[in-house]
Length: 146
Ligand SMILES: [Zn+2]
Ligand SMILES: [Zn+2]
Image (cartoon, rainbow, N blue to C red; front, side, top):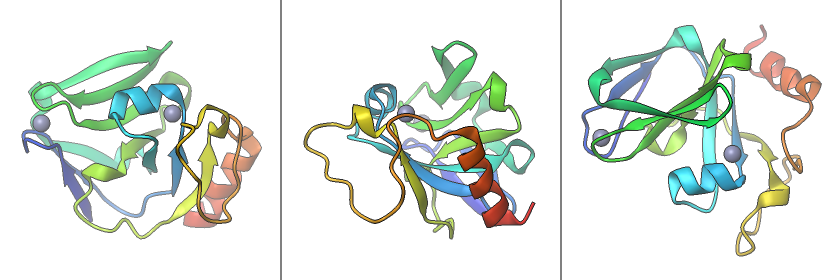
């Protein structure tokens, strides 16, 4: 079991089972939403992710059509995002985790939007925007055997 919280602690969440995989996103929206040069997320099955406290403090911003970024309205910590098209999973912001989720970075997304001062380390594949859905499916099957 993994858990996490926002900066002020109002929002608490837990994840049961293993995350599917981890990735980093360098797009302008993630950068603006986090205030960081890029974000590190884990993909978790929606039914394994649960807000355990502070639901009333959770606000959402529709950053793309039908894609919502959920954050703490009191302290501003980004918690997770979820899109209508990929409802079965949530993308959880790793900076809010309390434990090591076990998985490591599978790929780098939206490298074409990367901040000019960032150097990407490691041999993981880099994609100019989202990887092809077929590529993503591959990470789903390797990490959980599902
Ligand atoms: Zn908070
Ligand atoms: Zn992004």
